[in-house]
Length: 318
Figure 1 (tube, helix red, strand yellow):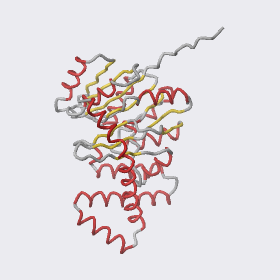
Figure 2: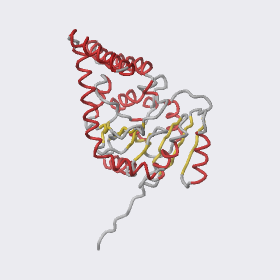
Figure 3: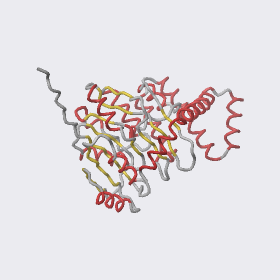
Figure 4: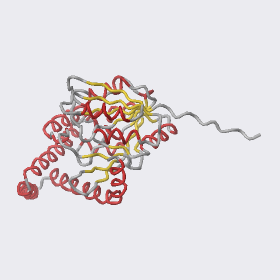
């Protein structure tokens, strides 16, 4: 007698989408979730006090599409961490995915991560590589990491890109604790803090294939470098193992934000910084310049092969 294979029902997945004034992007974001090859999904939209017509776009989209939607309207914007936490608390899925209101999932994103989590029951958090896209130019950057702890270390000292857990992350509900929510006192560095706390409490893994498009759009928090610099400094104090490590990371962060400020002012100011750095033999400044050049070059080279995939996906969402 041949035993029959019983197909286990796919567990419910929650996708938490916080959004603020993303009326031009939120429909494509929602559609990318609705188009997933994995079907058992609840979509939790948290409008963070938008002042444009984001709420109308969401309401109109839901009226035209079948799906398991929950909408939370927050009258007061208390930051993206609060919005994500509100979505987490309203969710009921076995797994909770995060997606910012202007980013996009590839069609197999949810399925691939759920299958990995189902096969690796000890894992509490997974993230994936992601592709940075801007409609202003044709160049893509693929941000790819294999070692989550190296990713975190390079994220903290600013020599590497962030992990974008806010749009690539998936957590297992059974591992969730009140101490593992997003820190509402942080803005611009809350994703790194979130990953650091999960790494200390649970097992985190990186799934190898890129499954998210990170879209550059106006009014993103990463453009507020002063707030990010302040909050990243707080994380150094919080997580550095000793004073020597704290000082070293703080110097690297300072060099990064100096370069970022000069890049925004123009090529002349940046060139002057490079000359002064060479004359002073500033090791942190030189390391940071080389790290920024290297990470962007690698990201551009890796992103080149995904031009067609990204174009096809974006066209399907128009």
